[in-house]
Image 1 (cartoon, helix red, strand yellow):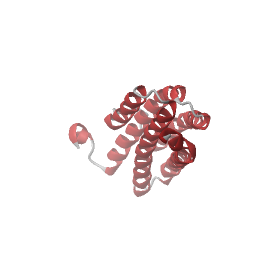
Image 2 (image 1 turned 60 degrees about the vertical axis):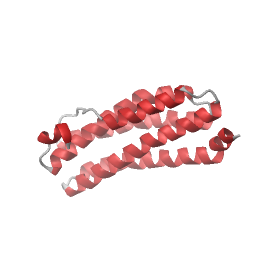
Image 3 (image 1 turned 30 degrees about the vertical axis):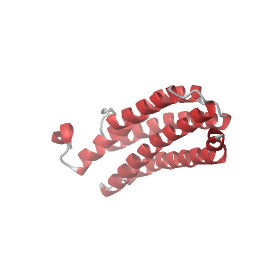
Image 4 (image 1 turned 90 degrees about the horizontal axis):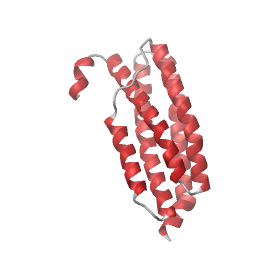
Length: 168
């Protein structure tokens, strides 16, 4: 477990650590989405990213609610995984001149972010239930449902139009 393993002795400790990880991730995503929105040229993609920015603000509020329910301080821990995903997204989208290819790259990057969030929320929900914290699991379930819906919508946009245009 590396540098933080000395602080994690129980499943509850692991739950709190991972909650702080997703809290950090959501805050970084909230900062990164406006750049992605600015770069997107497809109107449906732009609208979808704007909608998800609003949802991300709600995800942050829900994670804060879980901290409160669980009786621990809401704070972040660095998450190198999301930092890497977001850095890669910024680098890839900065190197593309063709607007259709750029939109395809933005979708791929956004889906990488969504998949990371889905795995974290799925794990947190399972651990919350194991710890007898169905109240926390129920709050986090709202986040995972929105993340999954966003992922599906991004796939629809990619397959219906963006990937076809990028291939021309």
